[in-house]
Length: 375
Image (cartoon, rainbow, N blue to C red; front, top):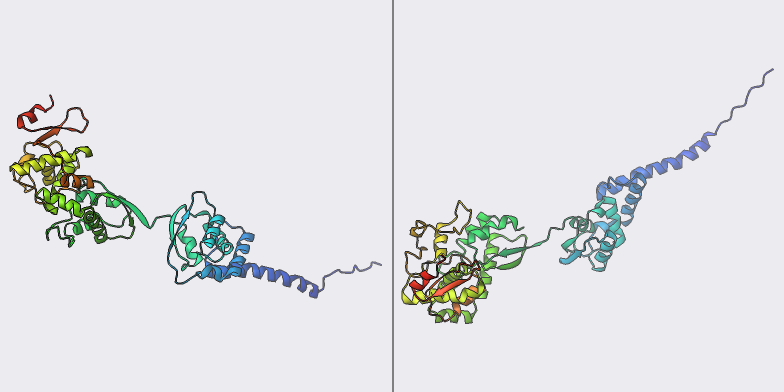
């Protein structure tokens, strides 16, 4: 007679007790990331399952410390992220600077979002009025709010315009030229219909990236006006020149002088010529009249041909008496000073030396001038 084997089984009540905690764990593992993603966006794809859950839970734990700004009315302050500086150090300094409330909460968000690896070294303008989430985004882009803009001495306005596309300023060359040709500056020393030519003061500028054409032209012209001191105006007057005439002559001196130390002597030559009723007969004024040279893609064609010297233009000082009608470029401060305080010389002529030094030989007579020619 065979005996029946007794069945072993787990009571349904015990099974239920085992399943409920498991279901709760699974539910929490699903719900927590969903709740975090609803507020903070999806977590970084680089996080594993456990880290994703852990980071999501931290987001819910810190909650308003990540979504709410420290101060709703605070202004911007400069903040620098050094090269090689890690997110923990950056977060600590942000808290010390009063830009965020909690460095640990900030780091938790960086890790959750994957932004911890994208912080850029550079200069930033940050505000406690921004939520930490927004600050984390800003730290991903080190594009400066200010850019360095350089105007070189001797540039005409088209050359200034040509430098704009690569300057970092959001200003088009065409927009700049439109304003520069009709600046409406209001300066008492400029003719009413004058362009900004000659008054786009050379120098290195730190400018807001969002600056527009009107603001740029105004900034450059205001610096030119500041450079022309009352003492300099008195110096111009002693040479029989008003400010606009003096800037015009200084622009010619700027283009003729390769070496700054020769500017006072070159200014002296031109002032001597004007006093004697002689024409200036200077190549840069013809180059200005010719405009862009297609062959060399330069605004200052060199050398000039005999035909070039015959161009019909009020700027051609080989054909017209006196000064050209306006500046031909932006002169440097030293060129302006050379016109205000020229060297006292008997010279009426100068020509480049033959040694490639950039210096000139000066002479009193035309015969001496011819003798200074290169063999």
